[in-house]
Length: 488
Image (cartoon, rainbow, N blue to C red; front, side):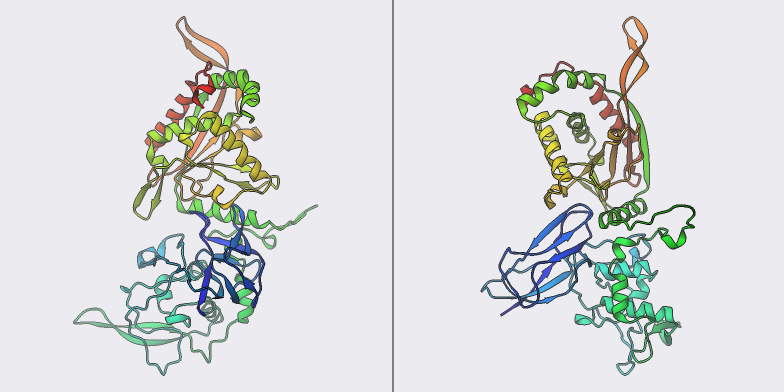
């Protein structure tokens, strides 16, 4: 009977790993097709993972609380069915040019494809190859890349390692042993001749870890345990830990929960990925205030859902996104990916103090009633921990309402891989100058600030400001006499 690999499923465009919360089956247990195998958690949502095949579980590769990259094999099942579906993955080539980039993200675990290279004498018991060809691409798992990045190991150095995995692939054990031996000072060197051109040669020193002499500074099991929470707890920018803080007076130290650790990492990664620029504008939302105050009771009675400002804002924002497709795009390497769908993420505060971003799909195609029901349903599901994985996937633009908590404005951080996020401030009554046919007049109006952070790699100040101006115009031109049921 065939042995089938079960992999960590892809849960969203920006999700790179997930934490295993619970296994429902153990080695030797029988599992049916689509039966729940384990619970996993990301910074966005907790979810159950069903088995993609029926059979007997032969191997479980990760323990509870392990952080697992998307696409990694998590278990193996001996299939009892006649037909086994084949899981197809797309190879991702990691070129040398990305070695100096601040972050490396690969979505799926891919099989290693060996490339021609000149290895050192087979009698030399080494974890490295002596003459790597820098032009030959190699494949690395996301976990190996993350470990290499965190330890300052360049891609050139990584290419010298001969893995002990299938077909010579570098495994987690290989790189952790190398790091440990490097820190312990047990690396030795050999000298080889590396041709530069047809007329000249030069000598090149290649680090080597002899298997018999390279003793890790820690046992492998301890190294593996140390790295189990690495992705959630660390980033390229060091975060102070209790040992770095001088404690004075009455203090209390509380461990961050899992979601807060992941949110912290995603925020740091976003700032390191995108050069953030924030623009601010002011909007007169008096017409919106008047209309909502006039119809909110009848709206709730007729439609069975409350009318808040959020769906009104989202309707205007979606219309502006149609006019400025660059703000609704993503950047992939040197390519701009224009999103035809307008799926607006809505940052929602949870009772724990954490944030989650459910997504309203096709926001530009929904009426004010449809938007109201979508906003209220997703917000309630988020607060009651009832969101499905699909509810947080596919966002193309994000809106956060900082005014809910009384803030006038903010400088939000982009929700990767999007290129912009809009913060809505509190609505305040202020005396402002208004132009009238009779001349300027000072009157009381309902005003609010809007602030948008955007990725300056592809969205310049002109586009960002023009988009904000379009949103403000839609806010201020809201019809105070509008009959919503005409648009249902």
